[in-house]
Figure 1 (tube, rainbow, N blue to C red):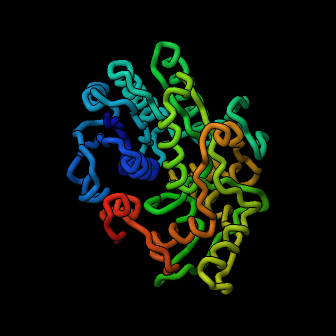
Figure 2: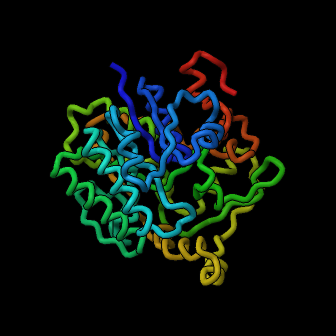
Length: 340
């Protein structure tokens, strides 16, 4: 029998890729949006999605949308880093209420904000969580809410990863770590001398789909870490961009943290970046030993992933990519059509 997944945040980076991966695995897709028509235009008119009008912070809206669903992908985040505590917690509470009524499993895309700067390069699922930032503390509280709900019968899956990047990820670090002009990369920022974890969104979403194929083997509250691509230092990204574009002249410059500090009292996004700076100055990575023992992990090579991601930012790399309003190549392949 076809299964149905409700995606909250389907127009966001993770939500859009989860939509594609689950549809490809045979799921019926339902998505919640305040303006379904606008959301459909953004995700692509040909996307086979049942759009439901509603607000992710209103429990009754989420409950109504979740009826008949086996999974709720909770991929909603407060826009532009604003009011995380005031928005993120009530939105998750609404999804928990919906899961209690519908019996669906909640999927939460996790991140590394939960961990202290000394957590290391290979953090396991059972590692202690000791956040030092406001958003990190909120994320820990959100996962605690889910553990408490699991004790009452609400099944949950947390899939944790590093920095998202990929096609249709306009707010990824790759966007602000590169400057682009006239179809080429005009510069790449070097963030410093430590390793950093990047998660290619198509692989991460495919990982989610494969995990859900093994629903019967998942714990009521389960957590898996997705290691993704580990770059040894900040300069490694610039070197990789030079390689995939074939342009050794691309300058690699030190990231202007001093400018972020000066702007932070006046610009909210800069203030948030400064608070999370430690993620770029100490190596924080994930161990995927548990995940590798559970599924065959999809692994797109970093060069190929970078090509697709840069192509989506308008860089000429020879890759075929996708943007909002156009068919994803996975969808096109699934429908037996040519990618556009």
